[in-house]
Image (cartoon, rainbow over all chains, first blue to last red; front, side):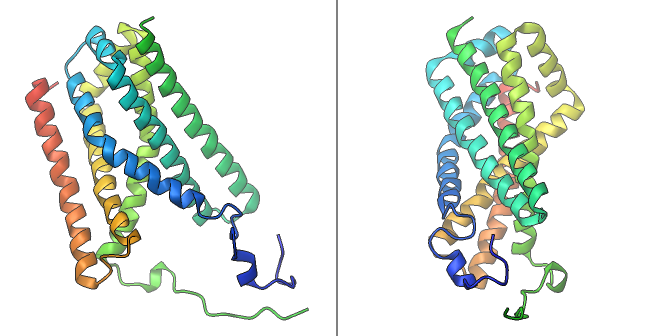
Length: 130
Length: 132
């Protein structure tokens, strides 16, 4: 990271891919996943409402059906991705110590991937009926 | 070595009068953070469904309790509020709705729609599930 003694001007540092070095890809993916969830929210709510009051056998049957499993998988991928980006933005806003920031960003990635994998595994297991 | 130039900084939050759009911006983040940790509940529920009747009964015992229902109600509001509040950002991203009356209307709309949709979902939930 270049400090204030650098020959480069602040403008030059943020040109092209900017200070994050990744350009606007997170901004775009945040919107992409948001639109995806906006489209998926009604089917997802319907699925959850269908499960109210059912016992395990009934719930497992519904969750394991092909269209419902696909809807939930799409929603899980979009939401965990969305929340990974959202939390990273919050971390970058408030955690100024570089080492603490890296640790937080790493923990954020681990948490989101773990939640996503656990949920995806559960749905695939329900779909395979074992 | 060039001396560091003291450029003017933008005023921090204490300097501003609290406005509706500012409050909703904070609530948007707060509901996002709440749902971030709330996904643990969602993952627990799915894993329980995949594990078997005993594990699933544990989840149902929790979601059927007063505290569980309060958390689920809060979760529903956080989800639906974040959704409609997020729609304002689509409008702003496309370059519309920046006039004072427009942004106030969008923000009031998000607040009211979030609460209304939450109540609507819970009315449907009680109608379908008979209070479970």
